Image 1 (cartoon, rainbow, N blue to C red):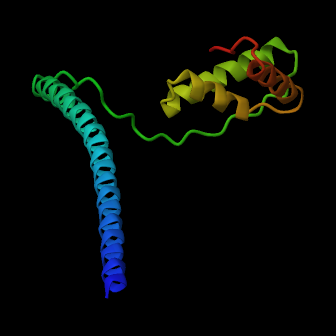
Image 2 (image 1 turned 180 degrees about the horizontal axis):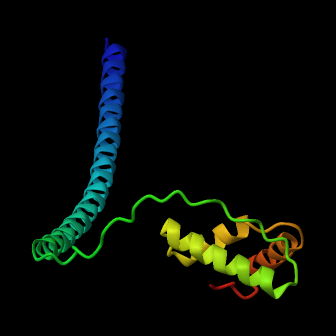
Length: 154
């Protein structure tokens, strides 16, 4: 009978030790999880603060735009009528001053008719009308720019 009582006491001790170990592990897990959630809360709070600031800024801009419209400040900006613009003749790269001048004048007229004012768009569009020697020059020149050469400006 004494051996049985010792075995039961030993089993109870082991069970208590196991439960205490599980309890400690569970506490550690819960604390880690709560710490992670707090970190996420801080990140979400920072995002919310940034969004609130941006919304406030946008509301201020909207108020300014509304006031400008109410005062007729943007009346001068009228949409360009849609014009059927013929395609340009391609430029082959001849060394004739007249051909170069005609191409440049034609491309400027094309930009004006199409309402193209952005310099990057102008350069890309003009490059689409280059062929033969002019296209080879453009290819070499744009490759040089990508390698760190000087930009081509309008």
